[in-house]
Picture 1 (cartoon, rainbow, N blue to C red):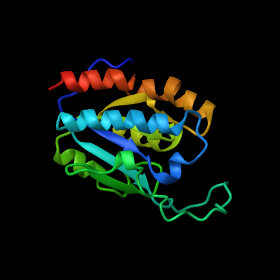
Picture 2: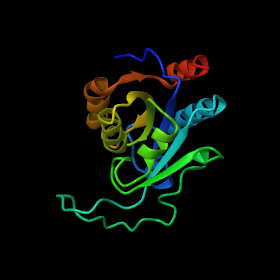
Picture 3: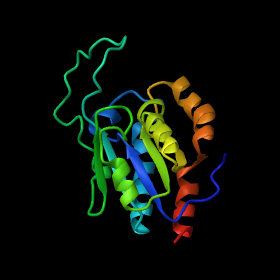
Picture 4: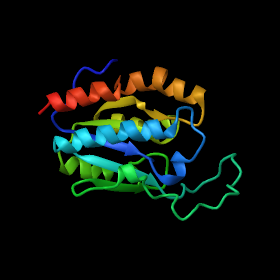
Length: 186
């Protein structure tokens, strides 16, 4: 469903815009995704709405079929890109799984601010963004997805998430559409 409205208590969740992830080969230029996310951050801050900056450090335990990474994580892997520098009032969440809810204080933070809707942006569409959006939906939040402020490592995975999964979880819109609604909601 196309984006129709934003709740008065909406928070922005920016997923994994950190040095390590923006350096990966993405479908869309990462600098464009970072720029659009920065526009969203500025709009939410200007309206006094919560901004949550999410990074990932490590991974969840358990076996899978992927080989262990042969690349050691650089010291700045988890450091948010300069455009996502946290300001007073922002909330930073460090996750160890794809999803930003398990094992973090994200849910309690949103509840303490009486948030009823979340807007998501970030990298990677089919991993961190989709996993977090699924949990937000399952937890009862209205979900909106800034589809031009996200990208993936795989074009098919990005397309599947944007065209098939996200419309079942919430509403989708562009950065420009979301910013218009943010500015009009106050």
